[in-house]
Amino acid sequence: MNKPALLSLDAALENILQFSTSNPTVEIVSTFDADQRILAEDIYSEIQVPGFDNSAMDGYAFCYEDFVNRKGILQAGQRIAAGHFPEKLQEGHADRIFTGAPVPDGADTVVMQEDCEVLPDGQIHIRSEPRRGQCIRYKGEDISLNASILSKGNLLNPSSIGLAASIGRASLRVYKRPKVALFSTGDELVMPGEIAPADMPAGSIYNSNRFFLLAFLRRLGCDVSDLGILPDSLSQTETAFRSACENHDLILTSGGVSVGEEDHVKPAIQSLGELQLWSLAIKPGKPFAYGQLKAHQKLTHFIGLPGNPVSGFVTFLLLARPFILNLQGVNQTKLNPYPLRADFSWPKADKRREFLRVKRNTAGGLDLFDNQGSGVLTSTVWADGLVDNPAGNTITPGDTVGFIPFFELMS
Ligand code: AMP
Ligand code: MG
Image (cartoon, rainbow, N blue to C red; front, side):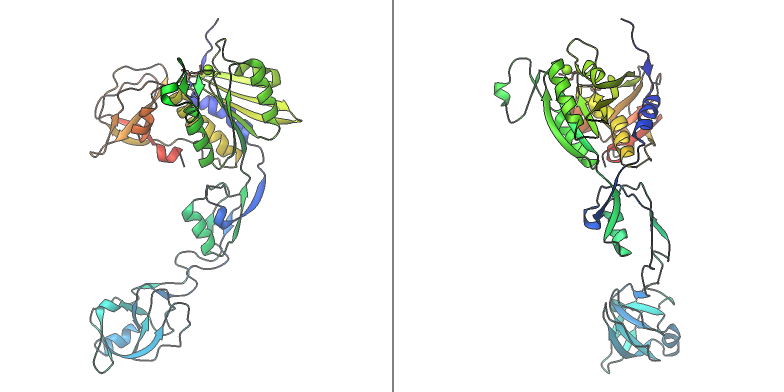
C-alpha cells in the first residue's frame, strides 16, 4: 500500500474551516447566562459610563480655588452618599462625599478622608496638597456615547458580560451551541468506575480520551451527548453514526481512524457520506479525519481524532477547536506563538512540525518534558503549553522558540 502524502496543519485547517462557515443560528440569552457563549451582534453603548462625574474616594469634595484662598480650611457642607443627587456646592465649603457619589456642581477636586481632619469648631482641614481635578471619575471616561464595546464573534467571558451589563444590556444575541455527539472507539477501552484497577482485564486500558474531550467540548460551549464507547465493529459503528446524525451538528470520535483492519470509522463514514482522511505532517498527530454524513435529510459534520491520548489532545486543540469555534461564528482561530527562550536542547530534527510539551520556568525560559511520546498523558499535565517547532528544526539552549500557552487553547 502506498503511504499517503502528509498534509500540513495549515492546509488541513484551511480545508476543514471552509466547511464550518455556515450561518450559525442565533438565540437570545440572559446576560447572566452568556459566559463562554459567542456574541452574534456588535454592541454599541447608548449611554456614557460613568453617567456623571463621581468621587473615586471616601473623602471631601470642594473647589480648588477655595482651598487655595482659604489655606486648606473649609466650612463643612452637605453629606453626599452614593445613589443620591447633591445640591450645588456652596462657596468655601467642603462636602462630605463617598465613593461613587455624584460630585456636586461647583466642586472640582476630591481629597480622601485620611488626608482630612474635622476641626473642633466643625471646619474641615484639608491636610494634603491636592492636584486640581484629582480623585474624580469623569462622565464618559470609560465609555463614550455610541462607543463600540463588544463585537460579533467575541467569546464572552466574565469581564465582557460585566461590561455589557454596565451599559444596561440584560440579554444578548449569541450563536446557538453546536450539538456534538462524542464517541470513543476500541475494544480495549474500559471505564473508570465500571472496572476497578485491580480487576482490569488483560490488554484493557482506561478510556481517558472521553474525559478530556468531553471537558474540552463543554469549555467550548457545546451541547454534548456523550455516547460512550463503540466496539471495533463496522456494523455497530455505522448504526451508531447514522442515529447520531439525527440530532447533532457534529460527530467527534477518538481512535479507529488509522487504516488498520480494526479501524472501522473510515468505512462507516464512507458508507454514510464522504470522508477526507489525512496523515498530518505534525507530531504528535496521526491520521486525522474530516467528513460529512448524509442521513435524516441533513448534513452532519464528522471529525475523527487519533486514539493516542496526546495525539488526540493536540489535534483537538489545533484542529477540532478552531472548527467548533468557527461553527459558532468565531473566526480568530490563528495560532500566535509567543517568542520565548528555550532552556533545553532538541538535537534531533523531525520531518514533521512538532508540538513539544513544555513548561515556563522561573528564569523566564522554557523547560521540556522528558518523554514526548504520543501516549504520555502526564506530559500534558506537567506542561503549561506547546512549543510550535517547525519541521527540520533543532533547538539549542538559548534559542528563541514559539510558545503556545494551554490557557489560550483551553478557554
Ligand atoms: P487507534 O487510533 O484506535 O489505533 O488507537 C491508538 C492508540 O490509542 C491505541 O494504543 C489505543 O489503545 C489508544 N486509545 C484509543 N482510544 C483511546 C481512549 N479513548 N483512551 C485512551 N487511549 C485510547
Ligand atoms: Mg482503536
